[in-house]
Length: 295
Image (cartoon, rainbow, N blue to C red; front, side, top):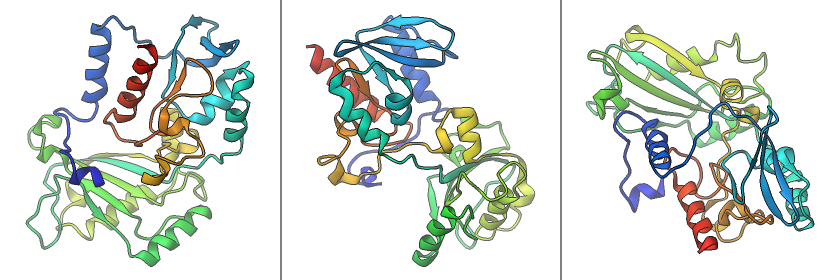
């Protein structure tokens, strides 16, 4: 949020997916090759440095530099094979780092009328926060540990099609809702849970009447879906959460300087500074470090 006060922020025309699409185009134009559905099974080491990666189909790819943008627990504890002695402390540290569960969900809703805040003429184009009180925020954190959801979870809502009409056909809009305090280990599970629809009912109480009737189609991306479809263990979108101080004093330095104790192995992605968001900041920082090492 602090970035909003020191630099311009915005959305790419066509939606957030245009950021990785543009990066891929630039990468391939520079001679790079992108492989999809190539599931990694191992990060191979030889001596004190990385040697390459192995895929689940048995393919081995030799590379002097490997950059992982994935969950650090998978990177260091699941995939790393034959790590050198220099990496013993790295592996030990990450063995002791607890893996958090997912805590947020996302609803994508197609509507045929523009949602508006009740009693206000302000549009919901930019993100609007609908927050419970401090006491409920504290109670919501406790409920998550018990597998429950707050009566009114914290919500971030926006209508991106008001800023970018190219994202929907004429007469339709996208209503986006992120719900916080929604645990991966929900009592009773997510498959048949009435929770996601309930959030739409909750948000409708702060919108002008008719919102629920305007819904054409919707989908819920709950923590179990994040795990199943996006390979995020326990539905947790790992994000650097140490704050500004941790950027300078961090018990796990690879989260802030991107290099590891293994020569040629680098870490980037949402777990590293400055955290999640479809903006590529961690990747750019990591690339800068790699280029400095190779110069």
